[in-house]
Length: 244
Image (cartoon, rainbow, N blue to C red; front, side):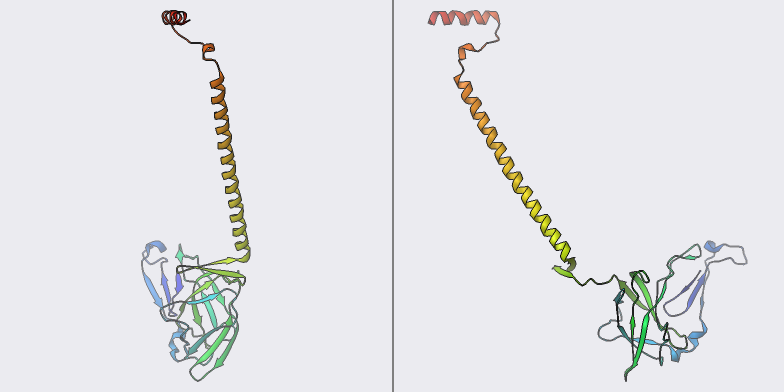
């Protein structure tokens, strides 16, 4: 395996050795210093102003136009590949699964008293994918700067509404807002219909119960048939005869 590190050196590891160890069993690592690191005077140095912080990554979005950075050290950057993004390396079985090199477009440079300003355009998706990268500035002599951690996000949509809740920011499009409102109205209508339907059912059941009670009162109790044993029935019959 071989991977480019943020400082421009290359780390080498794995592979066979004289003892016959295969790559996964060879724990030796080596650092290679390419010749371009000998020309330190022409090495670009990224200059961070008030917009960027040294302990936080740079943030751009895919398709962004006229992104701006400042640098010192090198006289000028390469016109075609002076600003490039390289995805962090991830290896397994001697294969780099995260190999991704993307050079920026429309690189323009303006020299100032305190340094040089470089503007560039970031390619759109799928030329570049959202994720974590290392940003390198490369001089005309091919000397890279120390990489800066950079985050590329998805393109920013214009017709969005920012809803602030606590410290979170959730972006909703106008179409999503209309759909949410429509769903709320439909749910409210169904709820009201359910309340009215349930109330009408309860009232119908009460009227039916009241009607059944009235019908039972009108029935003659003498016409009811009693399921009794013969001895008790004979005693009741004697009582009825005596009363009559």
